[in-house]
Length: 149
Length: 317
Image (cartoon, rainbow over all chains, first blue to last red; front, side):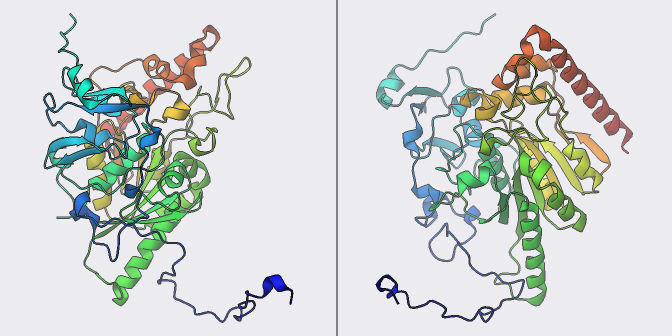
């Protein structure tokens, strides 16, 4: 045996076809990524802050670097209609107990759908440059627009 | 109560999201709006199968998964097969008493793109429908193979520019009509078949709930505006979908037991199809003078289809 193969001692170790067989209604594990740590409950009954996310869950990752513009949220104008929540493609609108709390900037990609669907006048969500400070953005909020007749 | 109440959007928003962010779908992609809505409209355990397509490749990029439920990735053609086999396995184990929690409600859902539903997985979907498994198949219809660079599929409508049906001096894009998948699925005798759109969130959530509740194979075709291949700004996803439903390019309707057709949304002002076509880059060539007759043809097809749907609804047959 050549030197490079010395550490490889499981070659031909198993008889083909002699491995343990399972019935058609049993699962053999191929590649499974567990979303949660341990035995997971139905996550529909747990708020995100109550869940024990595994490192495999994309919740633990960020796509913030995709953004060049970001939505800024103005609590004073918001009417909690939840339009932004239902249409956010990135699960980035944080909403609890029928109230809009803010934006999850780790998962927001800056698409701007939330601004388009915001029904208030002026809008309670607006897009600003990624480098803009939230305070400056809020200070420069546009006035209420009059209806064009 | 397994199905959550959705009287209004505020109430709907109290559901806990089971589809996580930081998936790699394009900004403004309608796929994730539809998937989120499905997962939010019920609190049952879900077993979801996805076949290859944008949704699958972007939500399970190793080492991450964006799904907080059981999720199976399978080949391009057989999401319907995976979901129906999981359902059979569940039933068998329930009978044998080998399930850890036999009373927990479980729903089986398959997601496919239009490529895998209309073309590549058509035979497998048809088989699963015929076998009558208790599952819901949802087609995320973005009218092309967006995952591989925007090739034409049999869901691509007349006149659209795609990378394999290009518009130019000798062609106006795709020449063939879109396949009527909803009618084909209804012809399988499926108990619930519908075409829904994410901009009408309520009819969509109700349709999903109805499909999940209905025993037997259900099929839902959903309109999924594709910012990359339809060529519009990511922020306009909902605006373009609004135009799609208001021009009746995508009428929203359901067919129960293969014959009882109900129109779920009637636009107050039916817009001309030019508004919808003009909002997207893939139809830009149709506004040249030599292609005007294509727009007329599309409008004529839409009018005929709407007339057909209304008469089907009236006739109740």
